[in-house]
Length: 236
Ligand SMILES: [Zn+2]
Image (cartoon, rainbow, N blue to C red; front, side, top):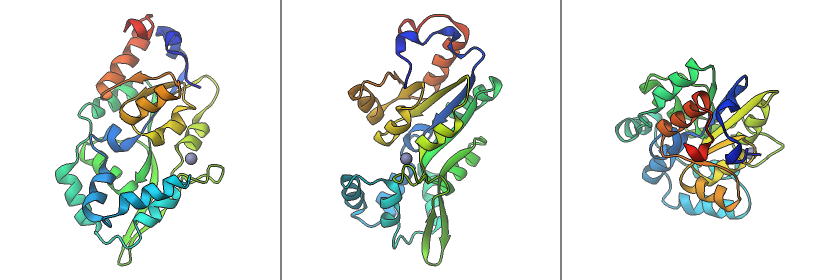
């Protein structure tokens, strides 16, 4: 459960193993990469197909195979589009260096696909471990596999909450950074939540303490204050 904001103060991170999990699409990347190329290349009714499956209480493990069935764009075509149109948060590479300098474990937890995450991280020259679904492109189209599917959840193609639980250990502070309703599940388990957009509304609705942010420069500023100052966040 997230720590109440009034209890977030300077000494909080001292002597702790700090694990930071960041969503990719719309959090590390400025726009949602997968949604952007699906709108251009997938079946025109892909959003309705996804909404129908979500309405049945299912998640990405069920809707991803439906959306990518018969999907014919090639890897090269998609990467050409992504290269031209998609950007990472310009402050993300600096944030990666900040985490490395302070010994924080930073990891991207994504329910998107590996090929574009790997491509964009390499384009920006950053090395960050990530979990995601996996896409293999072949003559039959895209074949998906889910190395981070968790049977206990059974819903997410790539289960962020299960990953978070695996990384929890003694004296660990887990920080989650995200933007979508799908980030609510791991946000409920994290100690500190940075939220924007849909996730911010959902956290407020569910009364999950969270720190609003626009980009990684804000996350870094707040963590620096935890590290160097003793004031609580309402004084930041
Ligand atoms: Zn899950």
